[in-house]
Amino acid sequence: NVMPAMLSLFEWNGERGETSEAGALFKTDVALLRRAIARLGEEHPYDEPAVLAWRCDETTPGTAAWLGGLTR
Image 1 (cartoon, rainbow, N blue to C red):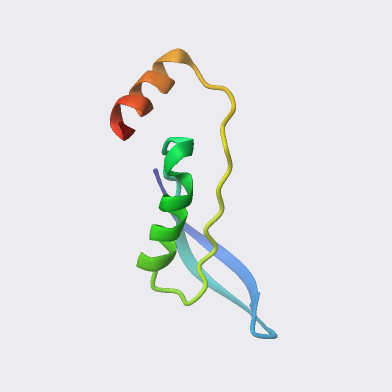
Image 2: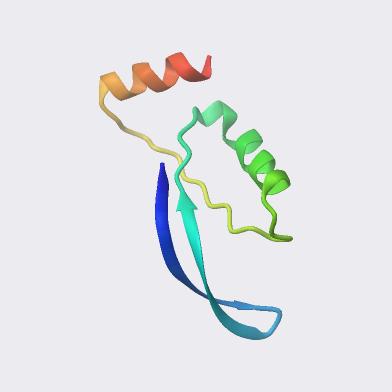
C-alpha cells in the first residue's frame, strides 16, 4: 500500500527540517521479515531510511491464506 504525499517533520544530523514524502506498507510473512527490512534499507535512496516493522499476531483466516500463498 502506498500512502499519498504527507508532510514529514524530522531531525537529522542536529538540524530540524520538513519535506514531503510518501509512505508505504509492505506485508510479508514473519519468516521473511528480516530479509525484507534489509532489502528495503539497501534499495532506499536515503542513507538511513526509517524502515519500521512489526509482527502481526492475529489476522483473518482469509488474509493469512492469501499472504501465505504469496510468500511461500
